Length: 371
Ligand SMILES: Cc1cc2nc3c(=O)[nH]c(=O)nc-3n(C[C@H](O)[C@H](O)[C@H](O)COP(=O)(O)OP(=O)(O)OC[C@H]3O[C@@H](n4cnc5c(N)ncnc54)[C@H](O)[C@@H]3O)c2cc1C
Image 1: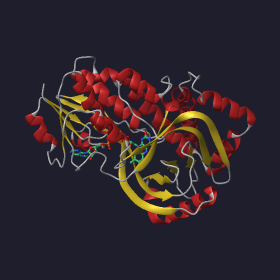
Image 2: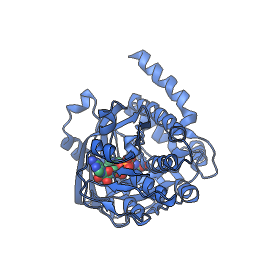
Image 3: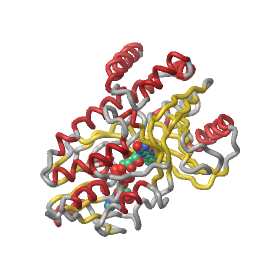
Image 4: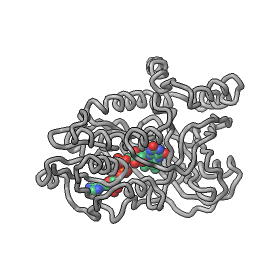
C-alpha cells in the first residue's frame, strides 16, 4: 500500500510510527529541513480535560506504544485575574518541549520511527494524490481542508510569545485572564527547564481586537507578568503567529485523503490544547489504513470534545473581569479548593468538560438574550 504523509509533526509522525508497526512503510514529506524546525516552546497537556482517560501519556504508551517523556508533571496551576490570584493543586497534567530542542515531542517521535523523512519537500497535496494510493494531510493547519471545502473555521487567533530566562519550578504553570489587557484572550507561562520558560499571549481576532496593536498589548501584559512573578526576565527568543486557525473538518476522510492533527481540528478552541488529540488522530488514521477500525468512528469523541470546547470558549468570552476575579478568588476557598482538587485528582472519573457543557450552554444563551 502506497501512503504519503504530508507533515512530520505530532500527528504525522504518530501516524507513520503506527503504520510501520503494522507493516506499512509510509513516505513522509516535511517542508522544513528537520523535525521540529521551529521556535522552542513549552507546551502542556491537561489530563483533566481528556477524561475518562486518567493519564494522557500513560494511555498513549499502554494502548498505542507511543512513548512521550514530558519535562515534568504539573502539580500546580496558578490563575491570575485582574485583582486576584488562586490556584489548583494536584496532578493536573504534564509540561513538555516542542520545536527544535533535542527533547521536543517531535524529536522523541522521530526516534521511534524507522523510515527516512523527505525534508525540504515542495510537494503539493494535488501531486501526492496523483502519485499515492492514500494521502494523510498533517500540515498543522486547516488550509488544505478549507481549500477542499471541508473545514469550518470558528475563530482565528493572534499569538505572541517569548522565551525568558529566570527561575522556575518546572511543575508549576501560570495562566492570566485579564480582559482589560488581553480582551477575550489569555496568557500563560510554561517552564521547560528550571531556567527557561515561555511566556505567551493569545487573543481571538474579533473586530474589536483587530484594532489592537499586539506590541502594546504585549508590553502591558509583560510588565504585569514580571510584577506578578517578581522576576526580571531576560528575553532570549521571540515569536509571533497571526491567523492561527481553530476549526474542524466536516469529514475526517474524503476519497483517499485523511485529515489528521490540526488539519482535522484537534486544537480545542476553549483553551488551545491540541497535542494529545493530534497523536490520537495519527494513530486512528493508521488503524483505518491497516483495517483495524474506522477513522470516522474513532474520531467521534473528538468531534464532541471540540464542540464542547467551543461552548467553553463562548463562556469565557461572556465573562467579565469581575466574574473572573470572583472565580479566581474562590479557587482558594477551602470547600472549593477541596472540590477542585478532588476533580483534578487521578482518582476522579468526572468528565469535567462534558459535564459542564449543558450549564455553560444555558449561561451562554442567557447572556445572548441580554444583548
Ligand atoms: C504557540 C502555541 C502553543 C501551543 N500550546 C499548546 C499546549 O500547551 N498544549 C497543547 O496540547 N497544544 C498546544 N498547542 C497546539 C499544538 O501544538 C497543536 O495542536 C499540535 O502541534 C498539532 O499537531 P499537528 O501534527 O497537526 O501539527 P504540527 O505538529 O504543527 O506539525 C505540522 C508539520 O507539518 C509541516 N508542514 C506544514 N506544511 C507542510 C507542507 N506543505 N508540506 C510538508 N510539510 C508541511 C510543518 O513544518 C510541521 O512539521 C499550541 C500551539 C501553538 C501555536
